[in-house]
Length: 79
Image (cartoon, rainbow, N blue to C red):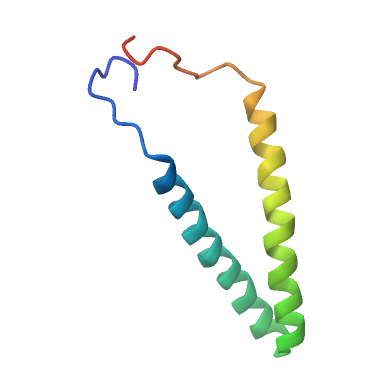
């Protein structure tokens, strides 16, 4: 965005919608692969549930870690 006076910011609801739709796609992919490997719906459900919880936790940790770094942040959009 550097040097772009017409930079567009994304609305929070749009970011949330994108995150939720991506989580559905990613978890469905994991569950599909688990079904191909096991053919057991109970295991597929357990893997899908674990996938959501574990990846949500690691995403949070990842975001917090990146929040500690200042490099690449553009505080003033006009510069």
